[in-house]
Image (cartoon, rainbow, N blue to C red):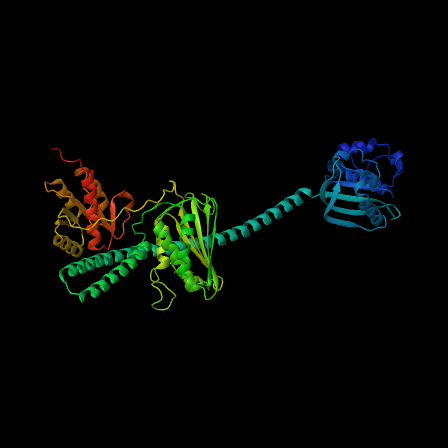
Length: 570
């Protein structure tokens, strides 16, 4: 059969020309003239079809294909034309043997998205194809070849795979976002709870500070009244009553001091101090505050930095924790203090270098609802009369007012850990100096400018000083005191309250007095104040003070002034 059944204008592609010009006589199919009519007709149809198609002729599967299949074959074209299929595609030889075996027996095969690895361009390549195989029959009905329709679906499969991967990534991202939302929500919930706790503590601090301030003034008036009664009544039977009254004032003063500490309004005297030396030096006090069956252990870093805080209040904080531990440890146990440096940025110390002091006990521990309230003033789990509930409040106020912080970790049955963070001192630790001897409190009749906004305290203190021979001018505001200092009246000493209504408090009044009356001695009195750091080396008299203490302070300041004055010329 020498002529095609289809006209030339149909068979005008590259493969039609190649098939016509190919020497088929050197293949097992033999010359084209000897091909069965059905095979030749099938070849013509394949060459005219735009769909990739290939005929596997004869029992060996000699390949005859069209232009679309040539594109599919890539670098294997045109060497594939006239080759045996298992040799032309050796990497899928077993697959093609199966095709020949099934179809040359009259069967058909169909595959959808069949995955094969082909070497179309000299390298392995994953491809996916829709494959349909059917026999080409001779005149007698026997199969004489295989017709294969090959449609590559690699692009669709890769797109589907990318879509699935994108969906999986999206699913994972959604899951991750859900986890992030849950975590963020929990973080916000905790932050909100902490903020509410901080706001509640701040509100309680303001209320506590106001109450303590008023209570201090009452104690001050009571102390002055007791002093006046003691001087006016010369009765032996009255002395024990006055002593008991003064003891009550002293106890009230200690309670007020703890309240001021919680409110962060205590007049602290921050200074650089050696934390190691302070803790080692107070070991005896700690042991006496505990019981004999509670062992004390110190674990202090050798390179411990000095801290910037009030060392006296630091000792009080540690002792308060020791007393709490004593009541929390039911039997034999341990009280451990560790201290180490916490550089800025380490463990949340973003504000600067800190010194971390941790106090642990092996006590009964606390439930979460109790831990949430431990710093509240007057909150206590102890029996009535066993504690005021101000110990941890003092620790809280001391740490916050010092520029640090305090946290509590506790689990029922597993003890309690209190962590105090105090700022690292910039200045070096100064060696302790011996305190100067207290002057004898002998009134000198000096002229005093007394500034006190509380009318009860002012009147009682002024009366006490008048009785002792001082010339007292009493004013109730800093502004009024400034007017007196600008006037012609002479004063030997200014004694003022720290916190007063109006535009001028005690600290600013002292600065103004130094400018108006150079060398004028100044004594300030306070139960609390945020301005203590501003007063420099001025004498601070803590409220409530005894009149005897005030007289001693006045006479000492006057003595210092007299010593500083040059001798009169003759």
